[in-house]
Amino acid sequence: MFQLTCVNVVRGRPFYGGASRKEESCGDGTVPEEALVPVGPLSPELCEGQGFPFRTLSGGLGSMTVATLPDVKAKLLEGKRGLVVGIANEQSIAWGCARAFRAFGAEVAVTYLNEKAKPHVQPLADLIEAPIFMPLDVEQPGQMEAVFERIALEWGRLDFVVHSIAYSPKEALRGRVVDVGRDGFLKTMDVSCWTFLRMAHLAEPLMTEGGSLFTMTYYGSQMVVKNYNIMGVAKAALESAVRYLAAELGPKGIRVHAISPGPLATRAASGIPEFDELLDRAKAKAPVHRLVTIEDVGVATAFLAHDATRLITGETLYIDGGYHIID
Ligand SMILES: NC(=O)c1ccc[n+]([C@@H]2O[C@H](COP(=O)([O-])OP(=O)(O)OC[C@H]3O[C@@H](n4cnc5c(N)ncnc54)[C@H](O)[C@@H]3O)[C@@H](O)[C@H]2O)c1
Image 1 (tube, rainbow, N blue to C red):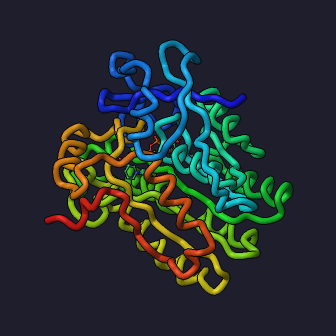
Image 2 (image 1 turned 180 degrees about the vertical axis):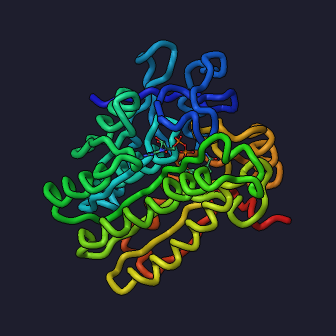
């Protein structure tokens, strides 16, 4: 029986569990205990209202509601196998993606950052019956190669990769772009952008029947968003990388996309000052007047992995309720 906790993400700072190492990162990382505000069990209606229907069960850990894997009848991705990188906890965008891909029938390999993160990611990997569960800190030489070698050994091929990681040292992220030092710049670009290029490089020989590569970006790449700073520069590079990869890999049937969600209260986002204001603005300005959920992002990403979208590539797809079209 697979179960997971469904921590309430209705506004009150849900940065629960997880252990992204670089939680000191894209922010200061370690989230103070007092910042954890579980708001009690979610009702099934509320979970459904979050954009992707899933059943809830009472019980489980403490006062938290327990949710099962979404019950999706159309297994549109059955037979596909892919890798999802970037699950830190149940608020992670990568988790929304992994869960959606699995719900649509795909097999999903999952990585965790390190031993500290493992206990938070393991139950989620169990829930989606991940056949491959491995450590991956992209800054550790050889770890990324090891993941792809294992995939080659066990599956012999690969259909999709979701790259959902970013990191910027606090002093780089919190300062003005004009002041960024070389080390902070290189680290930000290395983890947040180059690793996507490397994953594409390692995935290419395994995508023998074509495939799709996804990375997560943000509107701060296109427009100056207060407090997004050097991460905006890295995301601009990432979006450009997506287009070049799409051009280079297109002849092999490998499609490449950047997914650009509106702001979501995740651990990484906890490193961005005044994030609540960003959420308020997103809700007020977006035509749908609703905040995006990780389920919204997961389902849209899974959609782009379907063969029916084989002529769509090189896109930056906004999942932001239309925020980006409004002046
Ligand atoms: N939260 C938002 O508002 C938002 C909006 C748009 C895009 N994004 C992007 O979505 C992606 C996922 O972020 P999230 O919001 O789900 O937060 P998250 O904290 O849940 O995920 C970030 C992940 O990056 C991983 N990571 C950091 N350094 C790493 C390293 N050296 N090796 C391997 N993994 C490493 C962390 O372990 C974590 O799993 C990021 O690229 C982020 O920029 C987030």
